[in-house]
Length: 84
Image (cartoon, rainbow, N blue to C red; front, side, top):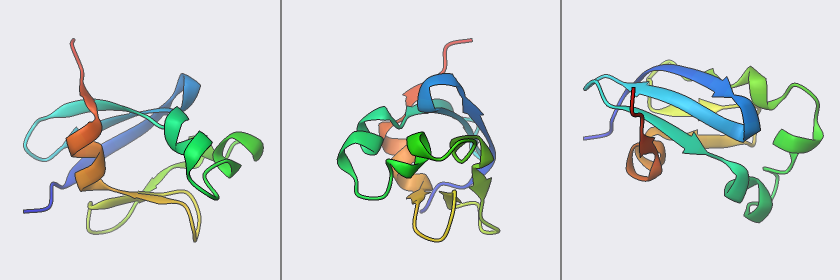
């Protein structure tokens, strides 16, 4: 089953704060993705782009534009659980 995201917030230093339908809340660090994945460098190079993260209607993908996106299962698997 693909995990569904219920909320997402862009934080400082290219970190996403993501809450899933099952209650899991993770922090996902995109710094490595920005360094290694083609096109992701725009998140650093285009002012304000990272902060404009959006959630698709299905809740299974976050995106910034037509070519930069990230699936919910990647965030679920590789995000670090929040400790509040």
